[in-house]
Length: 66
Image (cartoon, rainbow, N blue to C red; front, side, top):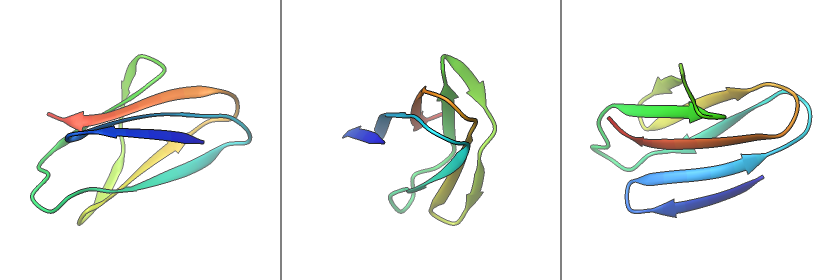
């Protein structure tokens, strides 16, 4: 997996078996938009932890404030 963070946005790429990525968001981040392969997807958030579920294969993902 690779991850790049610029300001409050993060982009990444991953490949392999289905798995979850947990991203620690900054305090007071607010609501987040998660995009996987160009489509907005649901993600689970508990406090400052955002969990994105990724299916098997190669995927690009992005997280940004709404």
